Length: 369
Image (tube, rainbow, N blue to C red; front, side):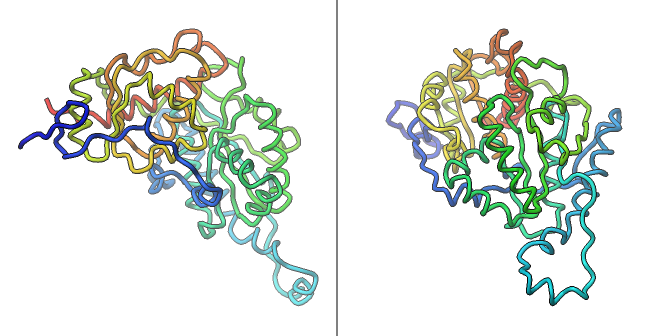
């Protein structure tokens, strides 16, 4: 097989130079933000019966049972209450009324990173008996971006006809956004929307091994009574019984793999970090559109917390989309310094390390020995 020479001076197996994340400046219209409020590609096919509980953690199979019952209890109740004016109610007075849902209208999945909370949250979305357009799934950041794009009142109108809203990674570290989303959720609960959420820990809260339900319930204040906390214990499944992540490759190996892989990107890691500062995190999903692999050279420690938090969002979007990451330089478990790993955002950083490590395993096949 012959090689052709690309502009950078490296050989190409695919006939074209790799893509570059740093060359992308995505623009995301508001209607796309709404349409994409579904489980990400990684969780398209997950269901409760594909969740593999840790046999040493009884809370995990119990969570499957509770969430299955919760989903079944959402069938029909919302639609029966909405859209009926006085005249409609009069015509249907003699019909059997659907039983009103009892208990909390929300569930909060309380567990550490890697215990499968997003898998369970997506399974709940899939199991809820409603058309896809009547269910919404997104991260806290995606929800706040939706409010920013549509405005508060329009967001309420857009989501109030839904049967279920799932919020992954509810952020408790920004008081303003927490109040905004809590107000939104209060309006949605009043409209009959059921809620499900996972969350991150408040800055300075260094509880070990799990996110704090008490923090979540306190911060959402008046909504606390609407949520049933569901504790899920366990270790990070991404490393349960799996081999260690492959060590970083050389710049030459990464570059060669980028040129040999159709749809791969190739960027210098410090340059990518600089570029992320120019793109709003709401667009990081669009930044990765069409990518089949991300190749990074010269991975080095993240210099500051703002940069680190942007990298966390990018790691989440890559993980959601199952985009393998091939890298040279430092291993991913050395991205964040001790001060960061001992600070208030520590669980975000550990989640990013966990997810990037899983994606590094996925990228192992891109390298030809």
